[in-house]
Image (cartoon, rainbow, N blue to C red):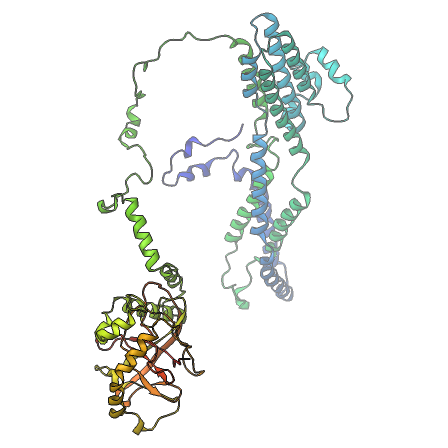
Length: 622
């Protein structure tokens, strides 16, 4: 009988498995004690020979051999080989158990599908069920040693009542070199067809269901036969066995305690009994014994399947189901919860604690959500907000996603992207720069674009150059101190703007204004760019800024007065993000032939902050 200890480990308790260590039947002690005693005896014999029967020179040679064996014994992959092998064997063991044919489903279909309470109907049901049990007996007799010892010949099967003498003649008259466990299944199908012809099986659906259950029953018989024929590959079993046995044969020499006076490393103690070597043998050899027991569970070991018990149980239950229980029904009556819409079966005193436990409603049943987050939002408002955010900032979501995907805030790319984002946010929320412009300039620049606070075309589909400066002093460089000049160093005497030229320019302001009005609807002039300067600004803008025209006959460059003490900190060319947040307007030069340079400076007066300016190159009017 299979060793069952399930009830003893039903509840986890302190040292729950320790009680199982004292069991003998089916234990590792019963399986391994012979090999264990043989190993310890051989180890003791070698140790006694080394200590009392070898000469000194022979002892030195044996000691070198022991050190060599102990060093290279670890090269044998014991855990790897045994682990895979035992896992394979355990899976195969459980699959074989699930392949044992059980008649429970078949007997239920047969009892309900084959009608007739007369002698003929009873005979058909009992005969068909006996044929199914005979098929299972024949296959178990072929694979199990315990069943074969119980039914060694067909005469024993006939005498046991599974087969009649007439059926034996039919069975032996069918000549086949193969196992004939399937013949009773064919007899079963013939009887089912006969019962359908007689009308005892009412329709074809019932016949189909009955034959499907029979085929499943016969399929399990076939699986048992194939498990018996196809074993674990022999080479795998040989490799595992050789690995275990060779390892412990080497340990018989390599794990010997050597003379401590010789000063060998790791041999400072002489304990005579190798405790840890014996434990290692117990574990590894016991692991191999587990595989040896489970590789064929149809034997007569303590933990092998009880096939004879299965035969007795299946035969008795199946015959009772199709004969005594056919049409035998208890009288139907109302149950005790007939008028109760919420039936509650009673509990004993030992199980009252179950009632105190709340019923499980789901893992999110007790989640707490703030009240302000529980209000539904109107879909119209959500759609308007999405529309507005899409028109104002069509590319901001993608830009923020790129910022969040940066690998590290302190990295080069991450830092550059975050600095650029900070500049954009400051420019968006900075005060209006209309304070730096006159009313006339507002009117002139208003024809170019509307609102926005980004300088010089940020938010357009073109590229703009953003230069960041940090002043060393708290006072910013005045606007008039910033000049344009050629790339070469200009003399100090040309740094200041001549007041007389300013006066002459003031006298011609009326004429310039007239020229501007005439050329407002013309195309923008070609924006030329010096090779050594930054990229040109976009052609459209919606935010007016202060514009300082400076007449120059040379290539313009951005120059700062030495008193400003400003340093160029960051200069980058970045794509536009926002279409509606317009940048500073770019005006045409008032004079057609003179090259003009424009500087757009936002009017932010906070000290020690970054300031972004957009520099345009020379504008030439054709």
